[in-house]
Length: 109
Image 1 (spheres, rainbow, N blue to C red):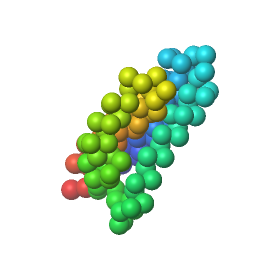
Image 2: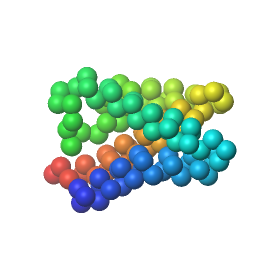
Image 3: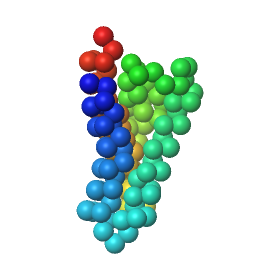
Image 4: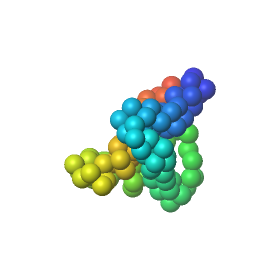
């Protein structure tokens, strides 16, 4: 089950942004893909916890950049054209991490 989790997690973090960039931002897909990948820097908030990585911890609601308030801010960024791609990347990241939380039920009993 852990292998399935990792395949899904990293596919959503790496392949989904590529698909979004190519499908919805065709003319600037490379630039968009790079921006979407850079939104993974949101994981810097993991460095402020001890341990930095805990496979049995759900990031959503735990780390400050993964908090519900932060997610609300990312949603509020969507209407602004200059922030939209960043907001999409951050929300895709949060969705991916949220899916991970379901696997914790199976992997950490």
